[in-house]
Length: 149
Image (tube, rainbow, N blue to C red):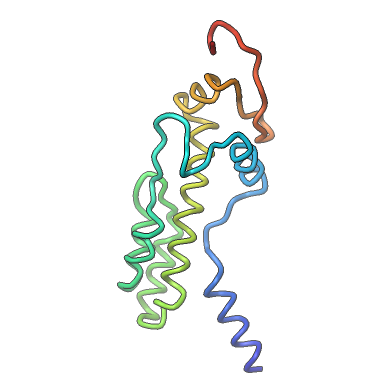
């Protein structure tokens, strides 16, 4: 019984609350294959969340989660996670710091995908490189025309 409790605690501490859908993971793989990452985006995209900042803020009870819940790429579920971390502080520091850092990275990945999928500026930047994101989330080459030369 003790081993099960330790395993459950470890898995909770090392897991994140924010995840990507199957299609988002495929789109992210396609972008990575062309060298487009959260560290090296095309054009004017900026990461909305700082993994280091979110982790450090979670030293205080739930503040990192409240940071992730607000802002451009905010995930409102983090208000609940922040409240739960507040209730379980100081123990929540054990899982809260890595969870906030991982979730900030996921939020950045999701926002990168949305930028190139739905934002006209992001779509234009991809077209200028000769690509577009299809309805299935794949990155495909587009024929060079007068618009994207």
